[in-house]
Picture 1: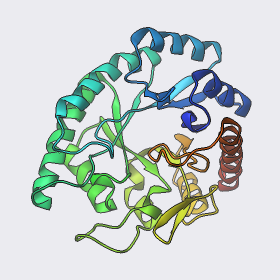
Picture 2 (picture 1 turned 90 degrees about the vertical axis):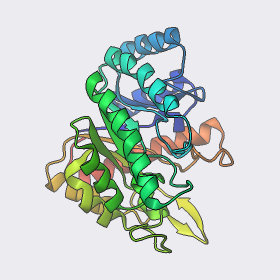
Picture 3 (picture 1 turned 30 degrees about the vertical axis):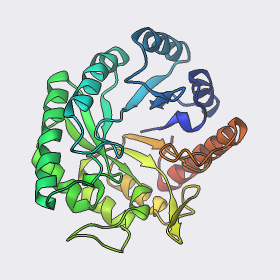
Picture 4 (picture 1 turned 45 degrees about the vertical axis):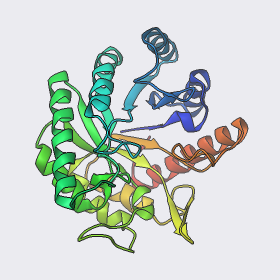
Length: 291
């Protein structure tokens, strides 16, 4: 078991992202962007330099936070965009010794019937996962606001359709509290994080820690344990169930990756990230872990 975090929430620069991991005593870093550019898209020489700097700091990459099939992409967009990103990621992951590539399952807005949308999502993900399996890595699907995150039944359907050792889950504790439950069609009810978690628990390979609640239609992000994501209960159940994988914080307290209107200065970002990590460590210890 280990604790890490998506460090571009602490700082845009690689040097500061490394620094925050060092300050927190982490051995792992969860990389998504450097200076606003996804690590699958930075130049090769920059990536090689990145690996050297991480090695000097004694850090390993726990997960590549790719944009493959994420909330900014639709099933009507060219599949080649995702496949090209995957092909760039594979050799980089091999160099880094990283097993997990975070993916999603496309924004759930498209023309045609729900059945047609499901068919196209499955077709695309099968191709992505097949190439990942051939490449020796694991795609971990996040329950974000994409097709597979619309309910735990959607996620279970993806697992059944993929049926591959190269397809597993990263469970984000906070996403259900701001995502409508789409079982049986559009719903006014937000998902229950613990219910979602219990339904998919056996397929979880990685965990994102996030918390919050919705008020007047807007999501308010909180420190872990202070929102409606039922984080302490989930952590305790994970411990009791024998989960010994990674936990990665994604605070959204000072900045929100997908919402550029939420901004904060460097000092606030740094402070909130460090405090979030300390809150999470305390909850992990209370659940029984020794991070």
